[in-house]
Image 1: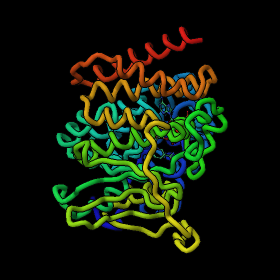
Image 2: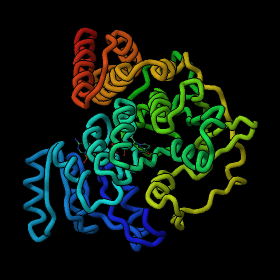
Image 3: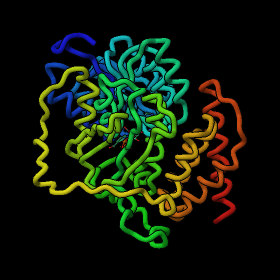
Image 4: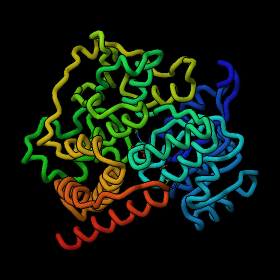
Length: 391
Ligand SMILES: NC(=O)c1ccc[n+]([C@@H]2O[C@H](COP(=O)([O-])OP(=O)(O)OC[C@H]3O[C@@H](n4cnc5c(N)ncnc54)[C@H](OP(=O)(O)O)[C@@H]3O)[C@@H](O)[C@H]2O)c1
């Protein structure tokens, strides 16, 4: 991956989101090593416009044609190419000058752009976990064809990746992903049911986009991460586990067969794993303060309560099932979380609906991106139908 000091061209998919903005902060901190060539956003053309002015990318994309037309007028004095829609995001992802693509669009909408990035054979810093959950086998196949290098951005997976560096997979007994427990970890099962959107978004440790914040409140996020880890590290279900760690300082633990347990610790800031995905195999100075463990004081660990968080239980089941199950699991969750954020359903409806619809999904073979997206669409329709019948 070039030398320690060679300049790298970066494309950021989801540049206006939480991970995208943190990535751009790192790039401006390390501007002698990285430059932005491509940006892809959804609807936030105002922020994308500011990013164009500051980073001067060669190509950008928005999800809607109308927004792209307005952006063209706003940027008439720039040379930037402006694209739109899925094809636009895919063009940014596959842009020939990219060296590294950070894939940070939320949800299954990130799938095609992630695949385009992987097919280009470059380094992909993967934040878009939903793509790996729904299409892990296909993404890995594409990566081995193109030679793409997938480096995890999720803090837990970055921790595992760092612990596994130079280790043999057959020496690994268990990979344990930690979870803060989200905002409702201390509540009783019955008190969690009717939590409001505001309470569910109020994560105690991490500041993140809305969808992943709700996923953290239901602990679906840890479930998605377990499935993501299965594909990223080629691990069987029995070697994967989760542990509640409210301080979010230890991001993951890897137990080796000789009894050693390796761990990765850092401040609770996504800029650390994002920077690692950009600089790997080298390390560069961080702009963040050092981790002061005497200030943290104690590091606590608890078993996850699967009765309180039934989506985590379903994720353990998904680890053992074929791909169709994970696609339905992910799609039903995205659709239910959307409805919750629009205040159409209660908090507990999220897991009730996801469990019902995922369990009802008929087994099917999934081979292509189209198969995945068709099943994703069908599953969302089932959720919407159930919501209509409930309310
Ligand atoms: N945030 C974290 O700390 C964190 C940690 C680990 C993993 N992740 C993963 O990283 C991904 C991004 O999370 P986030 O928290 O950064 O989400 P976010 O803040 O909601 O940002 C999502 C990004 O995706 C863009 N987007 C949405 N629809 C799009 C479309 N159709 N085409 C192109 N871009 C589109 C949004 O654009 P607009 O805003 O312009 O509409 C925004 O830039 C998720 O998969 C999440 O699970 C996040």
